[in-house]
Amino acid sequence: GENVEQHPSTLSVQEGDSAVIKCTYSDSASNYFPWYKQELGKGPQLIIDIRSNVGEKKDQRIAVTLNKTAKHFSLHITETQPEDSAVYFCAATSNFGNEKLTFGTGTRLTIIP
Amino acid sequence: DVKVTQSSRYLVKRTGEKVFLECVQDMDHENMFWYRQDPGLGLRLIYFSYDVKMKEKGDIPEGYSVSREKKERFSLILESASTNQTSMYLCASSVGQHTGELFFGEGSRLTVL
Image (cartoon, rainbow over all chains, first blue to last red; front, side, top):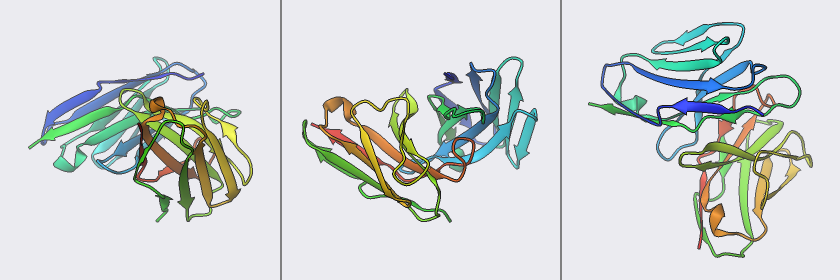
């Protein structure tokens, strides 16, 4: 089955700086890579996703890059703001057969005012 | 907006008790999921259901069972709670089985004494 590793487990950045969270996956058949954000006391919420037919996707201050050859993908947050403080989860799966979504272990991002 | 409601935010139970965690979604989603969230382990899939009365095992089904008698409701059952089942439990629903957006509830934190 799929194995997703996520680094770092904790990350602190100054407000206004950029934050990068990296994930690697093991199954070369994986082709769908979502990122979820979990704020304190809430359930995770999808913030961006990418499919394997593109290498990068952006949505305002958030971007995700995918390197299929190296089997890794990253979340980039620019101009960080206090409301970006949360736990972020990457995940991977394929839409072949009945493969399940496999989550990384999470990154706790703290934005320092 | 999709709303996934988990009946209890906090529960304290004793070892050996039977525990029911209830989840209701209001968007007519076919797929529903139960995850367990533990620090350093991320989100792990316990069971999922893609239709009424249907269920599939996830990655960690041992010690759990589920029930889906109505499309909008998915219940997680701990037949005989143990201390190692102390955790945060998250319910989710989606349109797509594993490559669509997951909509999570706010979680149920279970403590087994």
